[in-house]
Length: 389
Length: 66
Image 1 (cartoon, one colour):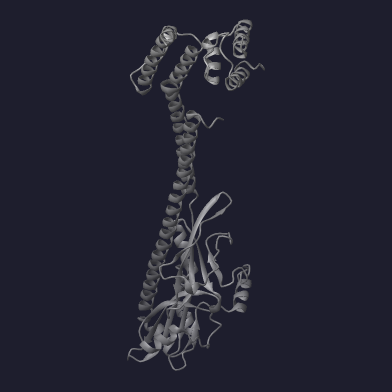
Image 2 (spheres, helix red, strand yellow):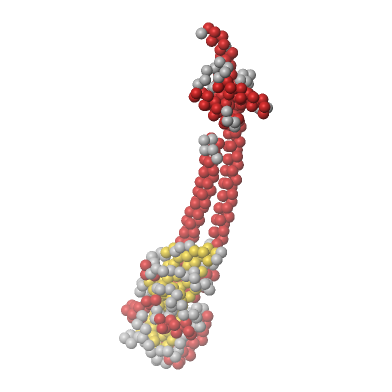
């Protein structure tokens, strides 16, 4: 390759344009995809957060309505007031079966303060008399009004409502509590959005032994050691690998955080999480959100391939066109001028330069032809001039 | 006869022997050496620099050592 030639330089410049064009397009497409993926991830996290808040509010409203109806029942109220546990169980058990099918998994009656112990657990009637000492217990004792919020028990996380129950004369009989496991929410959320979710619980709020026992009861793998700071309480996917988060749940901002994009096999996922606070406002867990963007990714790759192909084809055609034009308009005509000049020097004084156009090269052809004629005329008169000298 | 003229004869014989385009070959040699062969006559005085340039041009164009 002769770098002195204009043709070589022009070809190199055009090839550089091709490389820059293709590289720039690839970079631009990647940048656009990254931005879109980031936006999609942000949208997934904020959408999941809103959906979770809606579900939470809906369930609180449902449990509040159930409790409203319950405390209006004089038989139940009397059984509770007289501390007749078996009668209370007999009256409420049929209703509990129905409520359980609607997602209300926890139902408890508590004695009033100062003792405030569990009087009856509909979901575990054999266990009673214990003191829970949770934030919601203290809050309902303090306010004597409906208290609602998320409360993390030893091995589970539930949204609960707790309210006082009064007798006909207005005396405090005790408290009634309903709760629904938050793990159930994620399956509803998946059915609505198609995304996958995982409920993470901060390890410092979960009892390790209780977690192991609970997993044994439910015949689940004990996943305590999977992650350093949290356990996955429930998830909508069979894959454990997509729930990856090495940070501290307490540090996740209220609006959530978008995490990195990742690949698993042929699929591309984006993920993020938002914090879940308990009734006291502590970040005890988080909702992990995973969206499969393989379709978007494939579409981007397809568009990228088409664009690259278009650029390569158009620039190749452009390069061929430019080189053809250069050849016809400049190089061929320059070669003709050079050939004629060479022949004239070699003694062929009749060779003429054809003026083929009035463009810049044509003007040069005209000038060179005039110069040739003067030169030939000079050669013809040279002997005559020498004689005069 | 000069060395320059001998070179001119050598060139013309080579062109004739190989059936080359005389004007094109002589033009190339003339442009490379800076000396028009038409101006070389038996009485043209030798000039060492011109002789060297002409020999080099002959080697480059006709690929022969003059």
